[in-house]
Each structure stands twice: as C-alpha cells, then as structure tokens.
Image 1 (spheres, rainbow over the protein chains, first blue to last red):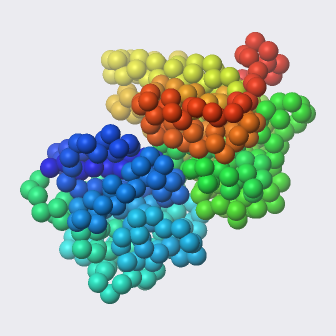
Image 2: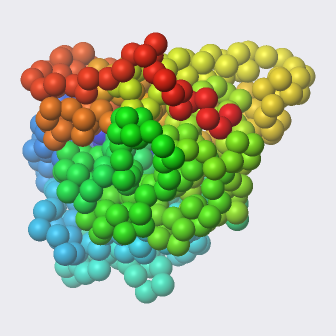
Image 3: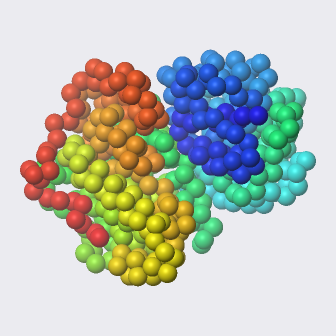
Length: 190
Length: 290
C-alpha cells in the first residue's frame, strides 16, 4: 500500500519518515501531477492551516482530495490537518474540507509559550506521548464522532468513519502506534 | 528546559516549506497572512528602509508588535539586537512566538550573543557558515537562517552562505570519526553538535534562507540549494504588487522543483524591488555577530 502525504507546507517530512520506518511507501502530494500515482490513504500534516487551505485551492488539489476523502479514503489529520477536516472553526467563517462534523478551536492553548508535551491515554492503544504545538482542540462534535483521547478535559483525538484527527503530533515522537492505528483503518496489511 | 527546547524546535519544523514575511503594520500582516505566509516578522522598518535611514536600529515598539499579534492567527516573530538580553525579555513578556536575534538591527554587544537557553520562547539566528550556525545552536537557537544581505534584493550572499553551510556539512560527513575533534576545534563549535551533523548530514534544527530574496525564482533557488523555507523581508512590500508577489513566492517554495509552475507564477508580478548590487553596499550587515 501507499500513503499520500499532503506536502504543501509544514511537517510533512516527519510523516514520511515515520512511514519509512514502518516500511510503508509514501507519496508527497504538492500538485495535481502527483495525483496520477495511486495511493490508498492520506495524511494531512501539521503546519499552518491558513497556508495549506489556500494552496489546496490555488494548486487545484482541493476538489480532487475532497472527493477522495468523501468517497471513503482513510485520512488522518494532525494539528493543522485536523483544522482542514473540521466542519466548523470557532470564531471563523472560512472552513476547508469541512468533512468531519467537529468544531475546532484554533490555537486553543495560546501562543508558542503555551506549547507543551504530555503523556495521555489513547483509546485502543494505551498511554502515548503527545506533543502539542500551538495546538487546536475539538470543542464540539456530532454524536457519531468517537472521541479517542483527552487532555485536561479537552478532546484532542477523534475518529469519524474513515477520518482520524489528532490535535497533537505523534510524528514528532519516536512512537509510531497512532500511525499503526491509522494504517489499521485502511484495512490493508502492512 | 530540554523539553522546552524540543517544543521550540518542533514549532520551527511546522514552519518548514513556508514563507515568513516582514511586515510593518497590521494591514501588511493581514495581506501577508492572506497571501499564504506561515508566519510574519513584525518590524517598524523593513531592512531596505533601515539601510536607507542609517542610525541605530532597535527592537520595534511593543504596541506595534501587539497590534500585529491581534491582526493575524499565524505565528508572529520580532527582532532584537544581537546580545540585547533585555529586548529579548520584553519580547518574551509579549508572548512572541519566535525571537530573531538579528544582524539587521544595530548590535548591542560585539562579543556575546544572548544565552538563548535562559528563555522559554524560541530564537532564530543568522549564519554565514557552519561554525556560526552551530555556535548559535549551542547558545540555544531553535532555528537557523542564512544571513544573506538584508534589504538589498540581491540573492548572491544568501546563495553563498547556503552553499557554504551545505558544503561544510558534506565535508564533516565524509570525515573519519576521529577527525571530528580537530574539526570542532577549527570551526570553534561544540563537539556534540558537530557529531550530530556527522551522523545526520543536517543541522540539528531547521535551516531557512534569508536576505535578498526578491522573486519566486530566488525563493525556489534557495530551496533547491537546501533551504527548508524562506524569509522574505524587503522583497515583498518594496515591490509593485505586494499581494501578488507574496502569493507567488509562497507557491514557488512549495513547488520549487517544478519549472512549469514556476514559469506560470513568475508572470506579470509587476516591478520587483530595485535592489542594490553587492559592490554598492556601504554597510555589510552579515558581518555583524559571528
């Protein structure tokens, strides 16, 4: 199997390295040309959601990727990637793919001084390291969205059908269990 | 403290593949954010104007920095003079996302840089070669950028600095392990940091290009030479159509290896900043703080 990693801006190389570590091939997606190579799952990395949202549209990747996700291609959004998937962004009119019925609060812990790392329970995995960088939180969700992890009472990971979101960055740690969890969602052997 | 340093390096990782733009007002900050900047650098005067004005150049007025922080949701950076511990403390009190200890401002100390490990907010510093880069990282910088020559619109110095850093890293990688001690002595850098370069072939922090980027092609050139992202100072708001140019540079950094896309987005950008050639420069900012 092959996992596409949106490579417009941000921490995409870290995801590619984690996939390499597990022996899964990856595909960096930065133009429509790249979509000609088939892939089975998609990762939306951390970075700045405003930048990625804009580039998705300007580089004509927005509708093709939205179709793939809507048709059930497994997708994992970390941090900014979670913002790209959210149907609502608190206090903002613009959304991006808006395919997952969650309300996300951007920069929920404030500026860089509010960034932190922690250890928390992830349902189905156990305790994992969690790195939050100017992180968002899930502030509200449709009842069909299943919450997977909390920090200090805030939801920071969730699953909805074939969509997985984490407000933190497993790809910045050496722990690949969340990635393995995601690969498990693809139904492929790896 | 080491956890803090890790988190600060992580923020720099999230800026990769992006463009950080100099802005001098909340309006410019919003234009930059709308054009796709991954962060903005809040300044009273862009480098080209600092160069033209002469005199002592200092940290910006905190009220301007706060207005810019309120205007955008992306990270906000600001500059302090080299070695000016108190300007850095002030920026930390403002909860700035990144401090640039910068040769663009007049140095406050001609010997010592700030001990950046004493701060919780991250620092980015300029470097012309591997020695400068590793010394700044040793002092606690979470991100490195080439110095280039700010405010000139001339890319030659940034190219020279990026090539030199990359060449020196390749040389270190090809060494015998027992030669690293002598190399650390020659470069005047901590051995443990040189060892990381030897093992990984990369700096232990993110490395951006800065100083003289004026066109999308300049930005893509720096990326092809090994930069992980680009700072654009005077190049945007000193040009004919800042919004369009800013957006084109953002796209050039993402698709730096695709000449067809680069050709398309280089069209009709209006006038680039006029710039100053290397030989015409009276003040070499890059020589500050080695």
